[in-house]
Image (cartoon, rainbow, N blue to C red; front, side, top):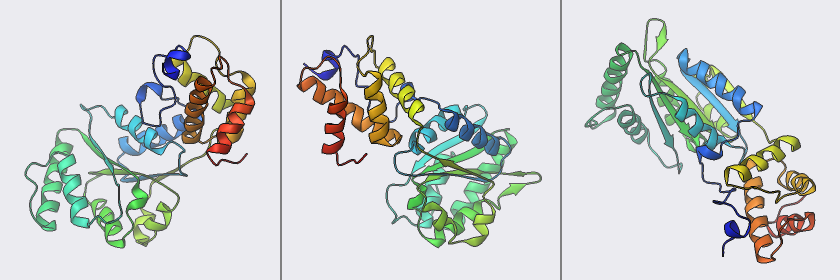
Amino acid sequence: MSYEQFYHLREQPFSNTPDPRFFFEVDQHAAVLARLMHAVNTMKGLAVVIGDVGTGKTTLARRMLDQLDDHRYESALLVIIHSAITPEWLLRKIASQIGVEEVAEGKVGILSQIYQRLVELHQLGKKAVVLIDEANMLQHKELMEELRGFLNLEVPGSKLLTFILFGLPNLEANLALDAPLVQRVAVKCRLTSLKPQTTKAYIRHRLKVAGATREIFPEEVLTQIAIESQGIPRLINTIGDNVLLEGFLLKRERIDVQLVKDVARDLGLGT
């Protein structure tokens, strides 16, 4: 038997893998998404979302991508997984993501193809948008210079491409490697941790989506998870998942505060 069966759940409610079914839109996320959509629809060129580890940047990036209708936007999401990428690699990825077929060899050829494709999209009435998650991994001045170069691709009254960068706070220092690029940031948003009441609503939402039909976490347990997680969604999920597992192993129908404290201690978290 699994803890899902023990607690009569259809699935695990606290996976940290992004899943749009579990998306819980707090006021902060709604405001950020509205600002980002404004940046895209007016083709501002460059928008930046800053947030600490676990505050929901990746979830928000995927939510943003889902909102970009294929009929109106040519959109793509790039996830940067290491800092050793080269400017040419970045150009090739952007080219392929916006629909360039048979990407050329060499930067000059690739840039020409990208420009031609962007003009084609503009003529079709489509807006080109590239979202970059983990953009804090872009750590070299040459990469920042390439991004700035893209912002020079425009037609009268409009940029041809908008970038939305999602990253940790050190992304700001990386952008500053190219001072003129900092001045091109048209929209900047910051994600913060969830307030206690929002944390509780977030937990209830995820349990409901997972199929909960009865109270598993009483109010005092929700309060303790809010304290131990400090309102960071990734930690909320990690604590919630471990609490359900431990509760199942101990055969507890309802979770108590001490179990949450024990789990937080074992995870190395401090109140």
